[in-house]
Amino acid sequence: MRGANLRGSGVVRIILLAVLSSLCAIAAAAQSAELVTAEGVIKARDGDIMIVQTSESPNLRVLLTSDTEVGQVQGVLQVRRKEMSMAALIPGLTVSVEGKHNDGGELVATSVSFKGNDLERAEAIQAGLHENQAQTEQNKQAIEEHDSHLQQQHQRISANKAAIDAAAARFGELDDYYILDEATVYFENGKVQVEQQYIPQLLGLAEKASSINGYVIEVKGYASEVGSKALNQQLSEDRAGNVTNILVQQGHVALTRILAPAAMGESRQIETGDKETEQAENRRVVVRVLQNKAIAGLR
Image 1: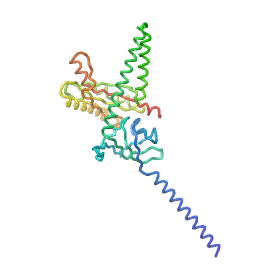
Image 2 (image 1 turned 90 degrees about the vertical axis):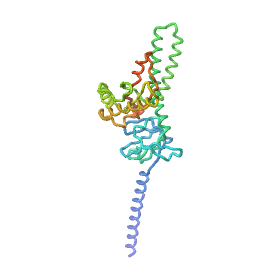
Image 3 (image 1 turned 30 degrees about the horizontal axis):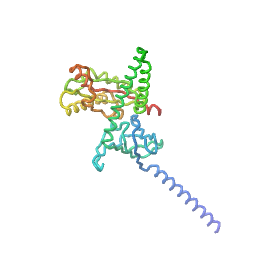
Image 4 (image 1 turned 90 degrees about the horizontal axis):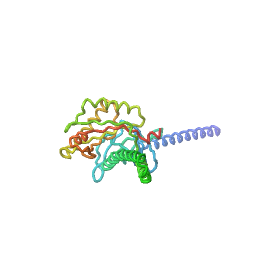
């Protein structure tokens, strides 16, 4: 009888140990599936993958899905939320991400939110950096040409070239993209519809982009100074939107590959010295295929 009791106690201990082990496994699984929040700045976008720099991680991989909710918080207390497109998630934007980690260590986002003024700031940075880099390259080329023809001013030119190189290095740190291709679509005065002659060029641009790793497409609309500023702002927005629609609907470019279309209004006017020519040049949409340097470095 005593031996039977001992054997019974051993069985009970084994059962209790098995139950405790199962409870620990369930608790660990539940903990791994807990909802987490991460705040930081978007460093790069590659379709549905977003690289976010947080205080805990310099390269947090965030996975965007069709169920991810993107919103802009508004109001003094930041309690109102406006639904936004994933195209608004551009590098330089400060975001708050909620989600759960998958087996690969990625944070699968259930929601991404940001403040309206943060989006405006990120768009301004993106718009300005590409223009600054292009101007820097033009200045550098001009100095190199002068260096070959003006040997008597070699010392002054060398100093200027060093300054330009330093500026180029600074812009290189800020600018996250290579510009791989570009197309410009022009419009008649007051018109926003894309003329048929530009559609093959846009579709060719979309096809070329599809073969590039880590690409995004930037679309910026402009208007001439004819008419009111408010009207020209709307014209530039509608023009950029119509070009974007062609890229998405006919070029089959995913929305996650297109940066939020920028309406530049009357800013950055092109000057030719001839009023009529200037107005025609400024009624335009500039489309650029960009390759993200950070994504390219991670692959």
